[in-house]
Length: 124
Image (cartoon, rainbow, N blue to C red):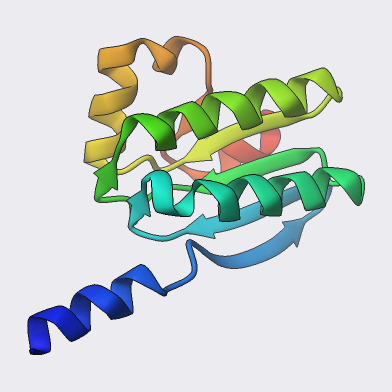
């Protein structure tokens, strides 16, 4: 029973854990699972921010432990959407798991990522 409870608790945790503005950049701290279940929340959050004029987004990906194809597709789709609106989507501290997936699919060449917040913020 405790295992089931913990799985249910994880399933209901928000994926976007926090949001803060640092100058013109909006920093979002993401949860552990960049997977299909969290794609709608990420898409809706980023769309809402873009609609409010927040077009420079930095995603803190340090907590991500699970990634699936829908999650990667969501990153790409949101990156394209922001680019089409003259915005930017960049990654901060991609976890080892996310870094590995980005390397395998070649997205490390497309979506910029940074290990430190200073250079990340200056890149906008």
